[in-house]
Length: 342
Image (cartoon, rainbow, N blue to C red; front, side, top):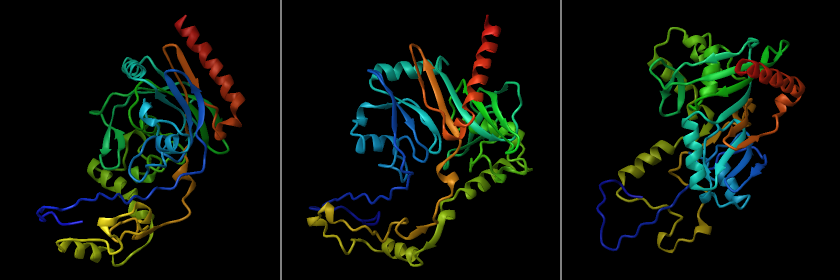
């Protein structure tokens, strides 16, 4: 590694080494729901992202499909994403034509997308429609908020089961649009945030946790600062190398830096050291164990349906005990819809 002022000389050799730390994920299988000539549909487990990002590369759905299940992920086109903690139906297109048609149908709102969520509070019996626009609160974190000047959104919510002892409800969520964090933001706005949602079910949004857009008198800028601070990666540090900052400073002031253990001209990748003195992750120790809400949030992608196809995932564990009630309520909902449209 050299500083920005270094001038390239004849016979200089460049080696690009990637020192990467993989974030932990739960030891859960990726189960195939269905496979056709056009689609690969899996039941996404909680705790891992859909595709490589940040400190997740191998530990992602696409990474595991390639390395653990022997799939050629270059032939799999991601049709939509699910949040890291979200479970359920995840679809990949196996060819360009299917990818194009699916995304075009989504734009025309011709794809039915149904989720289940367990929320805090007793949800109303009648269907609740939320059409509040959503915009980005923090670009660095991707966190959203309701904003009159944001992107248009439409979500329909229906109570399936209420547990008065727990003060929780299981809610059917059907989204007409597919904005990032749409269900989470809309349920927060309605005053029924998803259980274990560390981002939107949090008092950093104000005494009402952002219900009705009430942020406890905070300006949007102050809200942004507080929310980002709440989720700063430094909050996970239990111990750090006290010499790290000074080491970086010294390295930056030198014209050239080479790792003492590496012979760059005769490099063998199977002999690479596991420690890098300029790596932030190597210089810190994260808090253990991770809390449950780090891995899991009761938001489940249940059913996706479109022109000539329909895929459904099994009910998650937190909903299985209420499966009879959920199925009965869904049948009643279908009857009501039929009466309205008949």
